[in-house]
Length: 143
Ligand code: HEC
Image 1 (cartoon, rainbow, N blue to C red):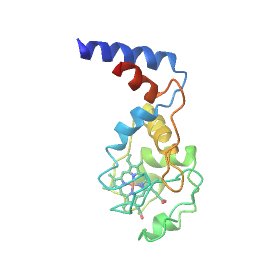
Image 2: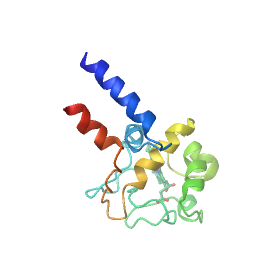
Image 3: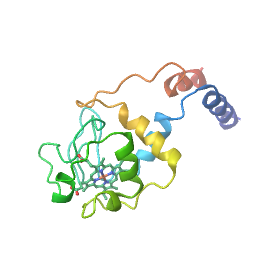
């Protein structure tokens, strides 16, 4: 019963929310990146560089991370368009990258992960999710 209520609430809320990009869904997609990447205020470089403040950042510029020359010299500025191309097929966008990831093929998942990553500023501080977004949904379901 509880699962049914949750499912209905989730379906209802996602249909009223006008946003095509869903940060909460993006968090789940990010599980696929987590083996190598961190975000948030305590994020550290791991197998891959910290992904805080990604959008607007020049590729290969996280201090203390040992990038491949391919990534460092790609000249890419990460915005939605360049990120979209990259994450769909990292090796096609940056030949020689040492990121071993086959790519996200589902455009909805790419939209969602963009929404998720956009929440984190350069210091890893997370912006509040707008009213009607995932946080509100959780609060209502908890009642
Ligand atoms: C197996 C480990 C691994 C996984 C999984 C992985 N990455 Fe990476 N990622 C890396 C490494 C290593 C680099 C650095 C590449 C280089 O220097 O060539 C990187 C680089 C990047 C960059 C470029 C960062 C910059 O500062 O220029 C972005 C953006 C990125 N990854 C996003 C993602 C996202 C989003 C996911 C999940 C959908 C993901 N990665 C999954 C290892 C990984």
